[in-house]
Length: 155
Image (tube, helix red, strand yellow):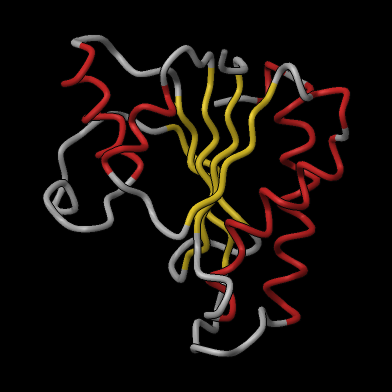
């Protein structure tokens, strides 16, 4: 049985700041402890795939988390809408396209979803996340703890 909340981050741990989504999931899971275990599932992957639409089933809300080169520092949280975008037929797809796949599979609206984009600057292969990106991650984690505990904070 799925928990009502899902925190789903993705990224490549070997490409500098691209690791922010996966690190967010790992660290928020540790920070939240066992008390939230029945209320939230944590999932991380290398990239989004159409199969991830199945992870939205029976959720009340989903938080997608990824690194971004274009969001404002330290992070941005935005509500998502299901849509077919340019990524829909590519190997890795956007959260909005995952939601669209859900819509088409189940002929129903997906659960409310939020994208948490954490500002990164360096995505070089073999590099660790940069100091500034890790500071952005820390601020995003504080926001994420509020998202887990305060339903009013979910967009």
